[in-house]
Image (cartoon, rainbow, N blue to C red; front, side, top):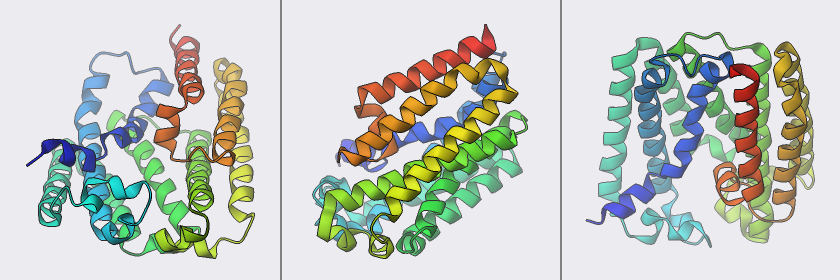
Length: 281
């Protein structure tokens, strides 16, 4: 048994999305308070285990199509590096472990995680085939993480922050779909059924509209937190950089874009620094 392939199947780099749990205390100025980070460790692990379970489940269902995909064919399940039976067992173990950890924290956190799992499973089984619905399913995962973070740290979520995260998730999800459509060309429908229902220009327009809306809602959130207003131009730069990346055919996966695009990574790092200086100085 090669442990490496099992780790790859869990997609650990996607765990970056679960850092959304720490956004509420970070933006509220609480992240440096004693015990705050430690308080979020177990919920973070719970979401990581559950999300990895969902990725493995999805790869099991799509292993036939993924085997014909230029990039996804390298995934451990699609390539045959992992036995589907063992992958199914790992998915079940991760799923149960994640729910148990959430239950140890609080029943409300457990319900957030169950909601996330239900949407993820429904997406893998059926909803990813429906246009717009597939984008909203992915976006809801970010919102659940944000709301779960508010619950864990007992911090109310600002309406403007809620809208910013939701619209940003729609923006990124649409960019990912558009990138898939352009990179796969005529074979795109063979790998993702929902792409057949998007007319020409629809995904482009949706990405531009949602990106504009993100800038507006983030600006409104920043106006309520006056010290953050200077980060709005940086936000615009990041949005435009991601649009350029997608339009240039360099890929639209949010995590890959952040990790592989040095400029986008720098934008994210500088944003964190600006928020830190603005709130914690």
